[in-house]
Length: 220
Image 1 (cartoon, rainbow, N blue to C red):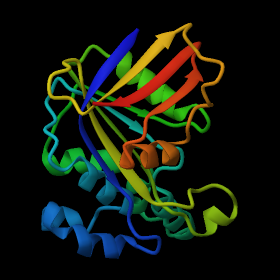
Image 2: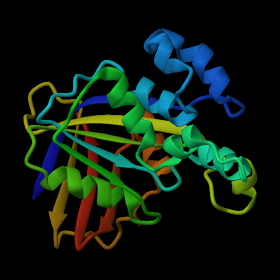
Image 3: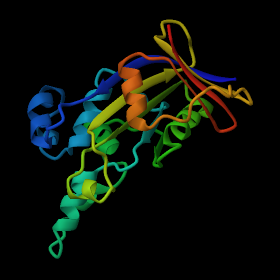
Image 4: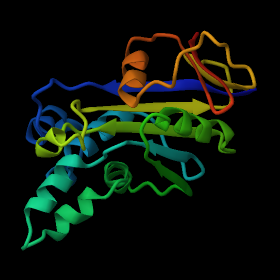
């Protein structure tokens, strides 16, 4: 049995029509003014989700996103032939978390950006469960695309989540566990990242088969 205890949770679920500029107005108090204007929508959402969680040098940070900085990538591609170096910099997959860590001036020794589709959630959770750090910070999210959404290459929702997962049980609000070879045939398939975010926001218990065992999310 592998397990970690949930000590911090926040999910950002902005209004459907929110833009990066709208997020800057809504979340301005959480960021330094100089950093605010350069941040992407997803960077702002991830930064807001993790606001209030202390991250230490020896903590591990894991980032899960299928599409990541969709809007920066869209703008970068449409900037050709005069390609924008800033848009290129902010369009890379780990950009949202890098924006947050740089803004905090926060170094970490282990940072694992993960991508995928059907198995992304269990990949991220399994990475968190086997990591040796006392605290693992699991971040995730997506931006809503425009023309890339029409092509099936982007999320139709913008959201972000932040979990603080520790080894100690005292004071925890929940528990994430993996039992090898313990999969119940009635357990469902691995949830999508947005389904995980919705389950966390609603404090719903979750259970699914994957990676040769069973994952469970329970609440204290």
